Image (cartoon, rainbow, N blue to C red; front, side):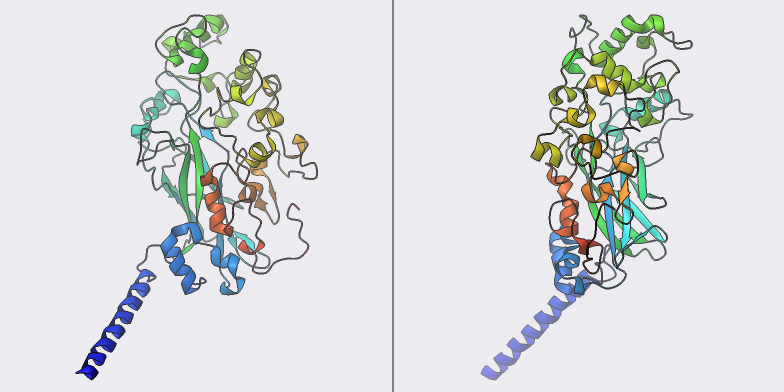
Length: 437
């Protein structure tokens, strides 16, 4: 009887082991939508399944001997520290929903290689899959931008939606004009400026997943014009809405100077796109000759009305709650918008706003660094890697105050940014490298 019991117990243990093995194998089978890299040891793959994408690249950092030739790394970022758009478009529009994501795919090696051929990079927003109910932009987009037909629901001005393929360029991938809002599907009435995007790189021939990354797509509607232009706030104008108060004031002060073809009061021409008359490089809108750019008009009009402090910058730029300037310079060195951009008088004199902005060396802090492009967000170094790929976006230079900005750095190197672990991209640690040249 005892011998029979031992045999039954042994059979039970063998069956349990076989069942557990089957479960583990099925977890990593070809049927898995996102199979783990074969370069990862089994314990790391189990950890990835348990903890999600947070640990995707830990094996590359912890032990380079566990990796195999053919490993890829995906670097991704948003091109700005914050995109903003109007909350309501029925009267006027400064900016539409319009967000940009950039990425580079690196083939690990010595040296690593930037690859764009035979690669596809896709993007999704797991908790932000629609925008139409969250913004009335689509109701007024055709009139605002003089479109030949109504804009398709949840599609932006460039044809991009809230999920899709990024466009391949010479040394990077980009999705520009994503019509993202600050409202998550799970809580569509509460602003959440630091939205999360998932990027996935695949072999365009086989569809095999090569790498993935979680990045921030910052977006906000917090332009607090109402702080001054609420009913009765300026010139005792009270029309019931902040936007119509602004248009009424604009008519009162400027209608006798309106250019030919635009003589009607703005209040009778709603919805009004500010960039129709005032040039906006952000929208590639040329405006009308002889009329100041939107940036110059806004900063020149308000200089002297408000002091040159970050608090008052947040009246127009997002914002008292969003606080889009969240980078290491602000958190660790107490720098503000004015330290880099200057006050409103100085900003109003910028001949090409958006396309000409302060460089890292002009701040007086990084005099040993020379950007190879006029804008930080377009500059590269260290083998052609974009500055923002390692240091993150302007206004969010790592390490950032916001936890969501750090997610990708923990995925890549198990530490907050900037990206400084050589073995993320290299298979062996290089010697005597100047990463900024």
